[in-house]
Amino acid sequence: MNFKQFCMTTLAVVAGIFITGVLSMFGMIYMMLQMILLNLGKEHPSTERQSILHIELSSEIVEREQGTTIMQQLQGIENNSISLNRLLDALKIASTDPKIEGVYLDCGGVSAGVATLMSVNEAINTFRKSGKWVAAYADSYAQGDYILASAADSLWLNPVGEVDIHGVGAGLFYFKGLLDKLGVDVQVFKVGTYKSAVEPFLLTQPSEANIRQTREYLDPIWADVRTVIAAGRNVSPETINTWADSIIVTEDPANYTDMNVVSSLRYRHDAEQLLKSMSGIDSDDELRLVTPAEYLNQSYAHKYQKETSKADYKIAVLYAVGDIVQQGDEGIIGADMTPLIYELADDDNISALVLRVNSGGGSAYASEQIWEALEYFKSTGKPFYASMGDVAASGGYYISCGADKIFCQPTTLTGSIGIFGMVPNIEGLLDKHLGVTSYTIASNPNAIMSITKPFTPVQRRAMQKMIDRGYETFVGRCAEGRGMPVDSIKAIAEGRVWAGTKALEIGLVDRLGNLEDCIMALAEENGANSYSIIEYPDPEGSWWEKLIINNAQMKQDAIKKELGTAYPIYKSIESLNNMDPIQARMPFTVIE
Image (cartoon, rainbow, N blue to C red; front, top):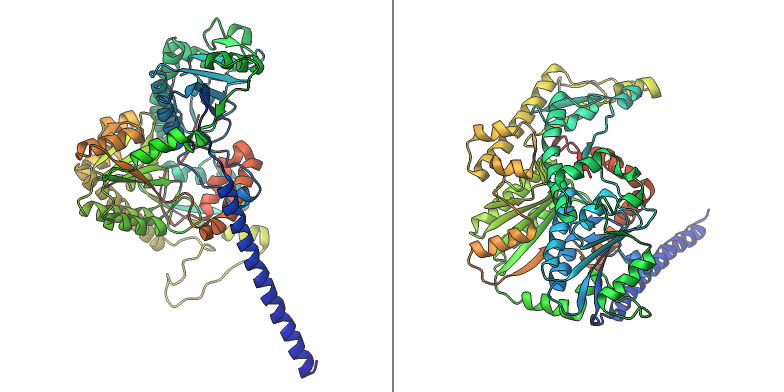
């Protein structure tokens, strides 16, 4: 190639890169303009009279409203997840809205934690106290559906449908056999008899201590659930136990009415005709259904929200949901949350903070950074309360323990005060399956601590010493935050998980209540006659943030859709890949 050809080739490459960049830029601009036009084109008409709040319970109830991704907006795809905070808002506002006749629970396999389901059940019962009706229909009721539907005045089932009530349990998965086959040895360092998050990598079944603690928190959770269902169906809690033990899902649906499991058997079109009658419209007219999301964008609710936002006392509600990591694309990201807390502390417009936690923990390092930032917030003299959702355990409790007041629900899982570390040794995997061996030459015995060799006794002692130090720090933070002696915290620590009712008894929390109870208590106890709420972090974010987040969210949505009920197992394995060496993490998830 001569010089002229070289120059021509180089110029062509540069021109190609430039043109590609320009086209990409125009493509992004076009996508943004499309989104703007879509948003401008959205109409939010006023709710008609004789309308019904239509709550479709066929997807996941998430902690808070999630922003729609760019691709979803461009493709006209709705975000099907149900936001707990918006659902509760809609029920509260609709209870006094003369245009809303009642609520229709359209059940189809809702996914949510027990505490979340109990919050919605309570909100439905509160709605009914306004004098308005609530009706539920399903082709078949899963247990989560039924917990919500039991709060309805009328509970309808398809004549060939089923009702599944079975109790609650903890799903435990063990990888020891798989690791042995692969030739991987997991070196574990921990503090706490009950810190069982490491057991799946060491054992093939749970330890006696783990079985004991699991039973001790599952029993009160199930007691609360069956009490709530029994109250709704006007039967005894013992009857609910009988239903569960008899595998009621196999019962002939014709018997459900006499058993008071359902109000009546009817097909969907019959139910819809009855809804028309209940809402006072002609049988030939269309049902006037409005979803919580649509309703909150409409006139009455929108006006209500604007009026409540005028108060000078502004409470920041900071959502901490998911695994705690220092860096990442999802979960509680320490590198993002820590500076946000500092900003809220220094913001003169923010009067107080409620930390809403729904997390089983994660990185001990990130938990400590968030804890310190919250201590800085407290140093400004502003009130700081914590509200716990389905779970606020281990690292989730770590970041909550310094709050002035901690609220949890009876079925919240909390505690799990303990930490652990895990380092794999893949020497066997490399040698046995790949024929790869390694050899280390170093100036000092500990110059290279590699996953291709087992730790030496000296290295193991050093790791355990670091874990012990981290545990003492964790316990110290809890003792300081709760105003309890260190020995008292240690007596209830050891990595042990507690249900909310027991956590209240032993002093890990201050009161039982949901997020709204926590916010109202903070305002009342700090002399705020009126207040407004600002939620953080911003669920929508900037256009650029939407572009960045889009791929990660679409990937998770696709995996969740493909794996279905196996998705939690995938998430457990994925979290190992992103796990810091030292963890403050709860071991498992209660499966409703």
